[in-house]
Amino acid sequence: MSISGTDLKKRKKQIRKTILAYFTLSATAIAVNCIYGVFGHDVHSASMTWMFLYPLLGGTLFYTLVYLLIPDVVNLKTYRLFYNSYNSGIAALTIGNFLKGILEIAGTSSQYVLYFYIAGSLFILLGLAVLSKFAAHRRKVHV
Image (tube, rainbow, N blue to C red):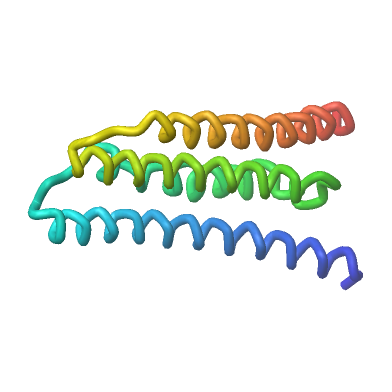
């Protein structure tokens, strides 16, 4: 086995770890919602209830599809740019929903929650742009 083969296995293992981490974060978000509901005197917020969907769909499902459809994405020179910006976007959207949920339960609101959604969306778009550039280049090379 060559060194590059070992590197590829190591990088694919990183995607599998990312999938597991996002699944764990989804479960943690569900637990946080349940615990917050108990201490919040059974007052619930839709934003906090559904915040687990960002790491579940945007993280676990997305990286599973990436792993299955384009596993060689780990060879991308700008993979870390994609990885870091996309993950930052998912984190910003999840935290934004969490804060919005806390504010809704408290009976107030804040104009600053919108900035989490804007920043999260921009980071995700940046990550997807880098990924799509790689996918287009890959398709051009293989055709």
